[in-house]
Image (cartoon, rainbow over all chains, first blue to last red; front, side, top):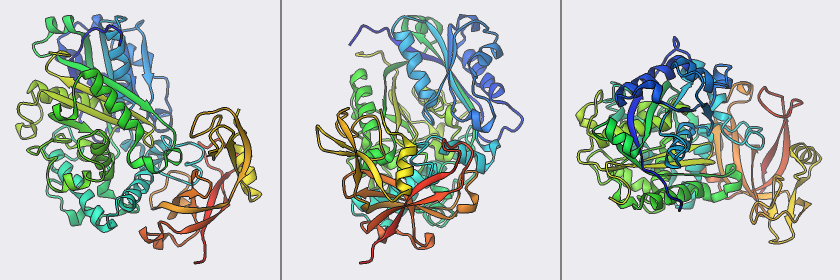
Amino acid sequence: MREMRDVAVIGVGHTKFGLHTDKSLVDLFGEAALQAIHDAGVDRKKIEAIYIGQHGGGITDGTTNLGGFMAEELGLRGIPSLRFEGACASSTVAFREAYREIAGGWHDIMLVGGVERLLSAGTSVGTKSLASAVDGIYESNAGLTFPGVFALAARLYAAEYDIPLDELREKMAHVSVKNHKNGALNPLAQWYGKYGDLTIDKVVNSKMVASPLTLMDCCPMTDGATACVLAEGGIAEKLVDKPIYVLGAAEAGAGGIYRQKAEMIRPMTRIKSSKDAFEEAKLTPDDIDIVELHDCFTIAEIIASEAIGFFEFGEGADAVAEGKTKINGKLPINPSGGLIGKGHPVGATGTSQIYLVTKQLRGDMDPMPDELHVHGAEAGMTDTLGGDFSTLSNIILSVRRRGE
Amino acid sequence: MSAGFKYFFNELKRGKLVGYKCNDCGAYTCPPQSVCQECGSENIELTELRNKGTLRSLTTIYIPPTGLEDEAPYTVALVETNDGPWIIGRLDHDPEKSGQDLIGKKVSIGCQELHPVDYYPDKEGRVAPLFKLEET
């Protein structure tokens, strides 16, 4: 591997996730970006480039070209400012590219983030915006929606691992109960103060969206923005007390689920991306203390937890049902509430995960309560999925430099 | 160069499921794409696949994307064709009775013509594979 400089997260920002009818994509991003810049304590003019993740603006807001407008919003006219699109993984993709720019010596300090307005778009347009992340020809023609993709995955999981569907649905419901319990405690979450007392029965019996997935198996549509400031290791140490180092950043791509066949429940993209991230970080799944992972649907969290290597294939459903992924469990998954409890503003989700893992590793949870803190966590991971397992990106963060 | 999506759907309307057969690994690619979907070879030739398959998964969509409100609820299915490739289409069956018990059932593959919608590459309309359960 080529010589790379250390890179660290030095500042993070996160708007409240929920409904923002009164704020544009640029307004929202500006709020998160300034928070991240102030958190880092860096002179705004030192930012050399901006990379933002954004997915559905063309459908929801009638706007696609956002890069330059974001730079202007922040008084940084003239610097390179680009939009990255990788569906729900858009801002993780942007983060990885920024990390590589700094690691490779092209820039020293960069701003990365993401933004989306899905809830304010309404259910019909929001569903279309999300559906534009599936294969635009051979899946869209039949009316396959995003919940539909994971509904197909859930039934395939039950069939392949020979689990009665009703039993699998109950195990899946544990993901929703756990993540809503966490999300209800998170003031940044769309469902803050709600659904903390959700039950398995309520999940299984809520409104059917795409059989067998009910509304409570699904993450909500959300408006929100997130951002972080990345800096070269030496600069980071001068600017902040606790830089959070980026040890691994990997990505993999594939086509629609019809090309992936039964492998969609053992997605090659995630297996490859997480393996590459672990190799770069010189860590293994056992070294990870906390994960923010792409639970767009209950079954999605189960499939992800297996493909990354935290649990054996076919055992992720049991792991969540047995409580192994609760905050006090063997491996806390989505202590923030995840996409299900916190909300899913598509383009903002990747850097939301970065924000959350950074907060956990710093031990500075504000504005989140200590109940959500995984005490003593030193290494964390994010996992973001875009499209139907077609864009997968994993980031590994640590309080230590690589190899330390 | 792939024959393209319009060719695939036009042939489907004529009752033919078309794709490519790889001259290197022997695998079939369907729907068409530029190289073999299994080994990546460019040494592929157009062919007709058998219009039979096995239902591998399905879902009934109750909340459709914009433009498809008049079609819901409808059932989308994932079928493994007898020649190997998996394809996505609609299931010709009562959507309220399309459950887990149908997985593994044999189907024949036809097509359904659907009205055009915004944000779809074919402005004349949509064509989707239509799966019919075979009598057992």
